[in-house]
Each structure stands twice: as C-alpha cells, then as structure tokens.
Image 1 (cartoon, rainbow, N blue to C red):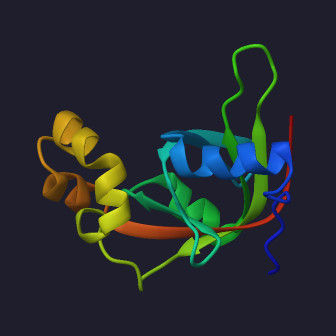
Image 2: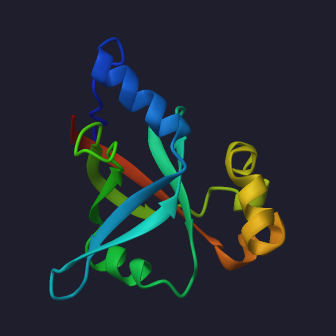
Length: 144
C-alpha cells in the first residue's frame, strides 16, 4: 500500500508531520461485526523510517478481532476545539510481531515513558498489559 501524506513543504503538510510526531493521543476507529464504527483513544508513535504508526494493544482488546475481520480503519488526530486543525488518516492495521515491546522501543519509551510509569506504575507493567504491537499503514488523509 502506497503511503499518501500531504506534502511536508506545505503549511498543512508541515502541521500534519508535526502532529504525527508530537500529539500524544489519537482515535483509532475499526468496525464491529455489524459494521458500526468503534473509535477508541490510543497512544501512538509515528515511525518515519516505515511511514507507519506504531501502537500497542491489550491482548484481550476487541480491536484485535475487529482488525482481523476488517483491517481497514482510520486514525483521527483531535481538532483544535473549534472543528479545525483535524487530521484523519485511513489505511490498514495489522499485528507487527517484528516490533519490540513498548518499553524496549526507544522512541515509544521516550514519548510515553513518564505516562507508562505515572498511569501503570512502570514501563514494564504497561508493556505486559499492552503486549500486542500493531502497525497502521496510512493510505490516504484528509483534514483542515
């Protein structure tokens, strides 16, 4: 799947690139068996090397069955509170067994290490709870 992101030399493209690096939460939306969208907030990491989003899931999360049934999904970055400055990426998501666990992924640990400790007690506990690495490959975008 070819990655389609806005040109980083444009104002919008630069803003998308910055937000993919700096935003800390996004909404991942998959569909359930009745095709009802099921958005959920996630911590995520933009991986420049692969042009993909890395995230980690609990092994009991319903999203895993949903993504196996239909890997097409969206990742939505919040707006500015007025309906502007939003970003929606659409693409496919899959398990990524080749990725290191969350606490052993240097970039993910740098971005979320304080939160892992503050919310879950330790980075290792977070990595045990959210032990399934996922990779979202964007194919298209829209936003303001």
